[in-house]
Image (cartoon, rainbow, N blue to C red; front, side, top):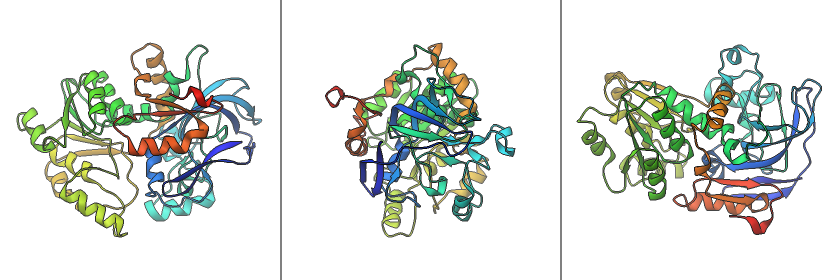
Length: 397
């Protein structure tokens, strides 16, 4: 089959690789019909996430048709399914609490030592996201093996096109959980750092949860305009100082809740960000944490901070004193996708949530390397790229 493979920093290629096979009775094989490039994939593309190996198949946002099942799979051939990016068993201590991204069994035993050394405990497995998260082949391919297929994938009713439901695999539940972790109350003012896919879904979700005002922060005009269309007020951090703007917009109190949807590759000409970039480039640090620092400093006393954004290692200059003295609450974590998928599918079917606005480009899988470069270099114009295996090269939009 054809699949997008990682070969180093800024080096991804569509190669011919072995077809996936059933390895466990709970497995299923999915023929991919749509797969998206995620902002988190750019962390792999930029070489920030360790334990990648040449030839690893990328991709964790995908859906398709069931073509083969193991003896204990509950799926049936021919069903259309969206697959969550987290790989969870459904029956361990954490899964029984619906904390699927903390699953004890989603990560193969031979890979658990890596994560335990770095993070203290292993997390769940993830598709296409390094050997630290299991070394699983991802879904930017023609076919993919799905472990625990009796737990993860959600069956999509006939008549609903891929574009409406594809983002149930990751960014929609992630944006929803980000807003939920912010513990939004009716009348709240919520600030969202980053108007990428997760940030834009967090904006929608915050309003649905009762926020009176949402303030979206970014520097890409098109992404800010998308946030404005959902009712958000906007702050362009290249044109104004974010902290000062937030204080002015909230009467000096600060937002009730702050959501960091940026993560470890924060942009901007700020002193702390420049120092972070120097440390990263000289291997003295791992993450550029400007946005989470700014969220903590801007949040009102007694407020809540939600951090759906990906961070991979260690940061310094963390405003721990401000965090403690202001009495803030921080909630974060990989998304418990399986927990949110059914309700969000219903919300899509009832037209309470729109997802298709996000798609800026559709490309054949064969042009995936071009898509990565475009998503990396043209983030104002490129909000989401959907790759379609078998798509005619002439139909790319």
